[in-house]
Length: 67
View (tube, rainbow, N blue to C red):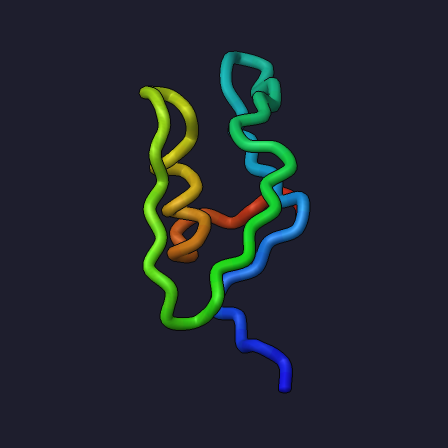
């Protein structure tokens, strides 16, 4: 029987557009993540590492550009 997965990403990418010409800037690139159902997970890293953006992608508040 296969294990259920509540969250699974393969090469997820997120970018924002900034500046006058709305140039795309890659914020997160190539995230591979599988979190089985019922698992508690934490993200640890320095300021600016993308922890909050990753959580927002997982919660559905942001839509990934790819992956």
